[in-house]
Length: 100
Image (cartoon, rainbow, N blue to C red):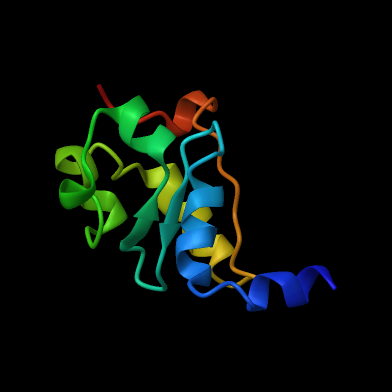
């Protein structure tokens, strides 16, 4: 029944994005090439960037290369082999914090 309710929504992409934007933590959705497909509102606010400077950009090119972190590259390369291709990497880890 729950699934049926959402398949009847005319634009499920709009609904998914609205839900995505309610999450408090900054989130990115990446494609298989690690380009940004979408970012949450909290991502834009936290990092002071806009959609036009973020979406379609390779993760490692965000913020003039601030996200080009060797440990992040390693962790993402490891997660790409996972079946569900979902990863949760916290920027609370000092090794993953973008260079300032």
